[in-house]
Length: 170
Image (cartoon, rainbow, N blue to C red; front, side, top):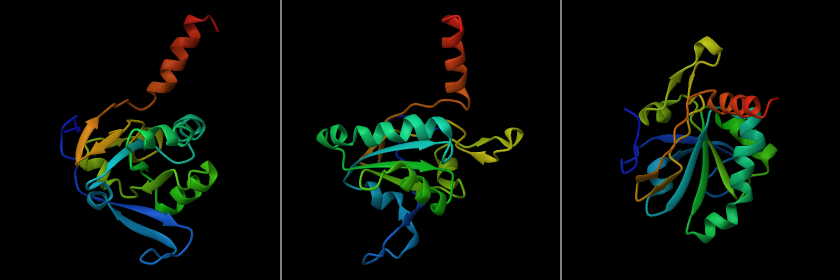
């Protein structure tokens, strides 16, 4: 069952790639417990189908980075991007997107948390395997509850662009 507004978000462990060693955080992949990440904090969590995908890299992640100050002014403690990728890929994508200090890039390598949210899709026919597949995850979480939610099927953005272009006569 897909998560809905007001549902308690499931526990899970994601992975984050750390560039520098700090106390308690070695260099390399580090587990991040979703419960610890969100307890007593207002956290914006958005999910994307995969790292380095064209639209996600050009529009989605940069929009959260650009609106970081606005979200912080509204009381958001952290902004987190989750994708069905490993921590190494998410770390490289974070460097590419220059998201450090603004958007935490966390990997759900096995897709277990995505599945627990009810957002897993089997995209083997498209040669992607099982993943989020373009459905956005809950955009915010406060007191361990989904505050808002939007889900989009894989390819919906592309189909919408084609419809708009057709209406304009292109």
